[in-house]
Length: 491
Image (cartoon, rainbow, N blue to C red; front, side, top):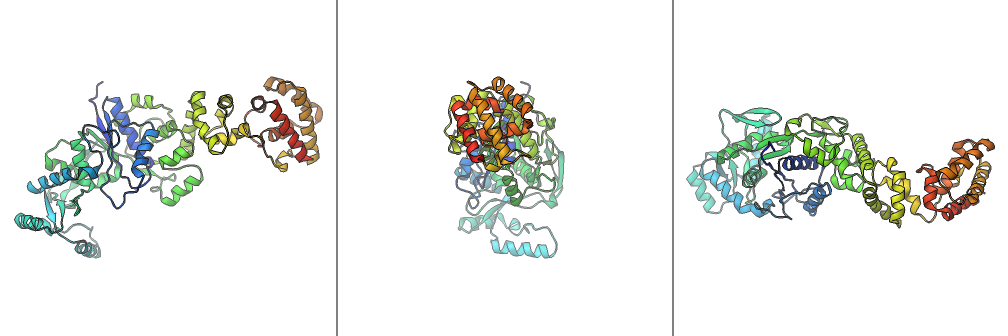
């Protein structure tokens, strides 16, 4: 391997459902680590306790495992650089914050939330960008230390440079130059002793020896702050890669909650758990999400092994990517076709069971070749193949009446179909096709009418897998009984 082993991390906050952006970042981190013989780490950034959602951490771990992105180190698997929850690393952050205070790169801030709010309002009245006004920055360090020792409530702010520029390098965008007078003295340690992201993530990436930081482009705004914090400690910087943002399907802005809800109604979602329940394959989701931000052909079908082989951070693109759910359908259907029959059978079985159907595994294996080409998502299996596992079907009288025919003539077709089927010891494509084609030619009815009545009678639906192959699997007693029931309904 020409590349040094990379240590990458996915560091989500457990504040809601695991979404597509987290999944794609995790995938890129995983690909880079595996390609270079390195490690992929899960770290839970749970310092924002007010926004933490019960169960969200478990959903993250379950989502990564469902996607097949098994992490080498993490909260539930351990590792040499734990703990892997930030709330369990509080003392480390406090020590590191004090180091910055001692070196003159940070200072205690005693300003109350009320005062800060007033300052912010006054700045907005003057049409200035809200920022900290530096009141506590100018305190004598000895006085500040005395107030801290006396137990006065305070935060710790990072002291950004006020003159010159900060040059930060992003792997995809090159050098980003920011005038330091535009920077703000951000809080890095809150009054409760927990860090903000600005301190915690920088400390953890250093302590865990992360070599490449892949994260969302929304962090570009505080990128200069973060590199200044790392430089204040005198640490080596990781390779920074700010990934492209996802836009809603129209390409205008990010997905809102309302638009996400609308997508769910159409059988799509930006949340990993939903995608799993909707019947999408991990392979389809990974292939789809990988290409939104990776400069390879948009229709490139790849397995995870092929992605590992081909991945390069040099091929990532900073351009925003519109979410295209039609592409997701395309990739999912393609990967369904690529699955071995026994694997696909195992994956669709839970969707049949969820509908209360008792699934015979041998029969399921037989129907896979018949329904595979019709599936876009795994849960489509019920619509196309549920009738195989039902004791009876319940077509409506209207559905049994063929196009441009009335009930009486449709009844005539059903009765003739029963006679043909009863005379055949076995029905399959070869034995069934010929007598029914002969009936079409002699009766004056067209093929759509004859086969349409038979299809609805046998399957209970107007669209089904190949008819005679389906009847062969269903069995003689069952299809004869269903056609007889259709005859009674038409009468």
